[in-house]
Amino acid sequence: MKTLEQIAAELQGYDPHALPAELVGAFLERLVEPLPETETVALPQALQRVLARDVISPMDVPPHDNAAMDGYALRGGDLRAEGDTTLRVLGTCYAGGQGWTQPVPAGACVRIMTGAVMPADCDTVVPLEFVADGDGGDGTITVPAGVVRPGDHRRLRGEDLAAGRPALHAGQRLGPAALGLVASLGIGEVTVRRRARVAYFSTGDEVLSLGEPWRPGAIYDSNRHTITALLCRLGVDVLDFGVVRDEPAALEAAFRQAAAQADAVITSGGVSMGEADHTKAMMRRLGEVAFWRIAMRPGRPMAVGRLQAGSRSTLLFGLPGNPVAAMVTFLMFVRPALLRLMGATAAAPIPLRARSTEPMRKKPGRTEYQRGIVTRAADGTLLVRTTGQQGSGVLRSMVEANGLIVLHHHQGSVAPGDEVDVLMFEGLI
Image (cartoon, rainbow, N blue to C red):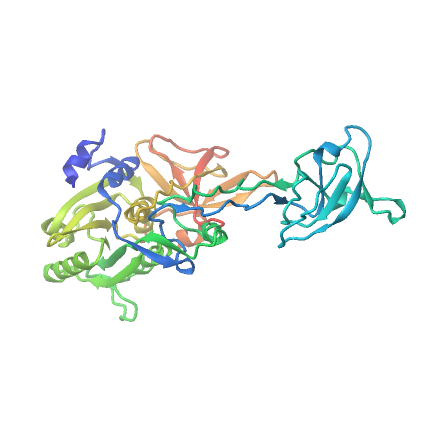
């Protein structure tokens, strides 16, 4: 296992006093190793779990050539290049059966339903809406010229999945479509990585838990609820340690207990420069920790490293105390690290491009994550504006926003009409 110093030495431009945001991800990729433990779970319990091994298809999907439309199965070679084609209808082929077992000679066709096995002699389906019945109900149909080409509207055996080939790969996080795909193969359980156990607690004498009476100088603990909710969405097992006072004995007990039970420990508060508390000192005492001043806004102060609990090494993430800064640093850095811990090979979210409707002041040399509201213009282009005040303690701005405006490290101020990157909070699935 590499030390933090060894990891830092691998990163060109690493400076803990002014660390570019993009280097944080590179550092964490080297720091975090996937959990080795796996378990086999029934398909209904596999949502958002990470596959531990490939799912191999036991069959071809589809298992036979079949009709992609309701219509008539015919020989593509019977279609006339010019003029209409008249074909004799032999009967009907329904989905769910063995299919049409009799020969289909030239000049004939079979009425077929979507999903039904294609007759052996046929390679094309003409949809019902393109067909005209013959005059007098004589058992023929007429296919107008050019409405269908040979091979149209036929699903080929194995065109989706081939027997013996991977249907899903290890490291994939299982969403609704993936669960449906596994079920379509007749597989009822999958082997997944163990859920990560993540402990969280807030620090500070000024922080109140819900139910405690308010007092001057105190604040209620919002971070505990926002971070815990983000962890639950991620699919980890959350260990809630509540609020820990800024006292050496209490902090040591909380860190030791959390490190002994969890794969990762997250705290908020106590990592800023010059704070008069014992959190940073206790982190240093109990593990190997780097304290960063990241070149970003919000979320400049952050701690990352490992805590030691006997022979056990536990990841540590010390987030800023301001609520927006805590959420942004979690989303940008902790979330992808925890996915990696659970063995996921998830790609970074793809930003959208939106046109700013207002000026945004920014100096090159840091990455800014401004809270934004994305809308659509009459011409279909995306527009974005800020939520207004962008202070790291203004949690209301995260509620009003539907995405983060990403102003990159080397980027300067934005003028109205300029395009910017936006990371949306919600996806379709």
